[in-house]
Length: 287
Image (cartoon, rainbow, N blue to C red; front, side, top):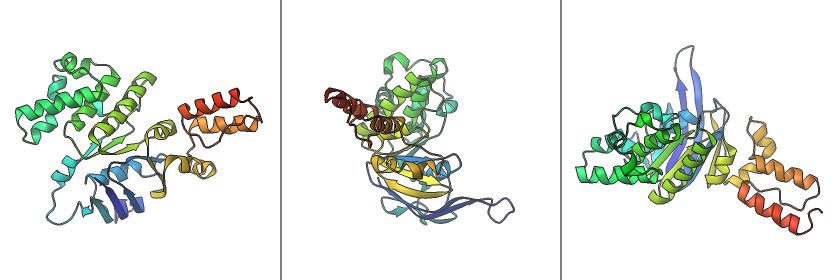
């Protein structure tokens, strides 16, 4: 499912002395099946924008389209939109409430009016796709799990709805390195398994470089760049002017180049940087 924004503007408290323009003429396209990342400094409008994608917020002006259809079109159903567009907020584990993991993940599918057999299938599949053993956790209280496991259960609850679009707002926030790595690995698996359009909001340029096919850069309520990751992270001065940065490995490669090592400077993730450094060392090391 594709996502489009056409000249979307949104104002909080319009017509009052407290009016604030959070989005300013935003136009973007996220093609079907794309893993996109949304980056920007705090207050740039990222969270406001993603809440437009499933109709939680209605534009002050402009349109949001899913597969070319305006989600606020007269006669349309926002309930149907929210079944197709799953949104995982920051710290989603705070929304866990049922007495067992299985019941919590099943809450959404039950509200779709599905058969018990279909609910069980979806719940089992979602729990396993987020990297948990269904039989081991199904009867456990979600509140007895680790922080990373709680996060995965919360994500499974959205995934069990089998949306065509999955939006995640800082899904690794507050996790330790191990939990962070596990969540990121599962997000990649989910994207590939369901072939869904995925939108990741993140402050981690490393996560964006590892996962995204398309990066949208926001600044002061506007989308100022929409390109593939390598093209975005090549614009270091532009990013730094907005309080952003490239992945640390990109800076490392530039420093190595300055020291005389024959390495490319357009690398954005650890795997490709490791290969380049090994090749440089085998080839004699420096220019």
